Length: 554
Ligand code: BGC
Image 1: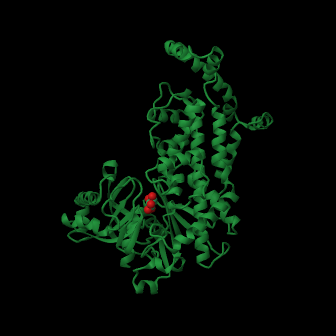
Image 2: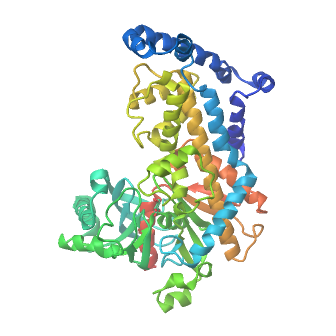
Image 3: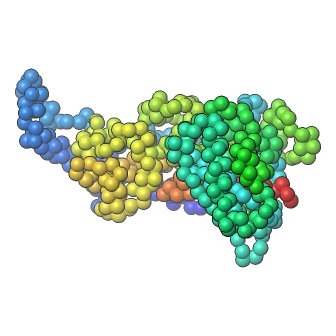
């Protein structure tokens, strides 16, 4: 992986107008025509606010009269012309300084070290993170079978029949034979306690009623694996206690601490469904298993979509013995390694520098400080951070000539997917980005090129920061693994990281940027170049749920 994406990103700094005149001269000489719009923008802003003020005077004479009659005439004129506190360029410069400032390698390295300090007590004792599973070995890639795989994500519940055929020349080793997807909207998310698991059983019933599924399984009971995108305290390979769920779910009300397998199986039995729960696993661990099935060098998995997590395959001794309370003696005697659900989203408080927008996000969150790392990098929050900056820009710097777009003052109304699509429009005119924004958040007149370019620049800065912080997080866990394996960065060798989730898979340049920062950090630590590679693991939660069951049988 070349450092090109990072270089491209770093060169973006030059597209902003510098504050001093002398600096402006140097930058202008290297700017392209396209970039130059930024330098003439303050002039545009001035004329725009003047026009906007005149427009208001013409359109609302009575209002102007009633507001202004009480003001002295000089102040009246000044207020009408100088509507905003600062220019959009000034604000953009500040956003850039705050978001990009902390991304130098030395600072990211420092964050990685601080994260590692936070890991130490949690590896000794914690009921909510650094959670060991009962999965000790990684798959060989030769395991075979057909399974019912369940994937409960933040916004969908998927039920699939998955076929694993092992390594066969020229053929895919994993296949989704059939899959049904059920949307989890707020009406489902807010189902309390057992009502949520009844809903799951109802959907499983519908999915397996499909004639194709019936034909595959005949009259046998389906072996079933579950990928769960929430923390779970494993009590065996096929069971685990329900822990507090983020992402706005209420299923733990009255069921917290109960056995997840039983919560799902009880309504399935009531419906006489021919299924039995064979494996429960966090979605990050499922991703690791599924990627390891295809690439034996896989040791980590990153999930980064609505939520965020990392799973890692560690020596058993990396966690305190108290973390294995209740594990069978046979397991403790035989296992050398263990698949750990780090719940990395919960780390990072006082590690990552925050801005006023991060603080606003945290203050209005239903569970402030619960998942600080997730707040800075996951798909649920990238759009929200950008929205908060836009709202400030409308109010204080005259973005959209000061008009607040529809719905944009509502929390979480700006979708990260919209920003990703806007970033993808690299045309000179930004026609698609403009049309998309206008369709999602209508304004009385379409946003200008400069307005849309401002949003694109802000989202590039927010997503770049997320990619760099993710690299720091991966680096800290890589250090943990390296030392607990008794290795050094130079001897750690090459390893692969399975990556799944909309942000890491699809957000423009995200994975490339993260990879570039990771390369910088690992090389600075003394590792060989390209010792870690981020590999996309498509549909890995659903495949991993099946691989987990398959590993039991081999
Ligand atoms: C949850 C994790 C999950 C991750 C990705 C986080 O919010 O706490 O358990 O793995 O999202 O889905």
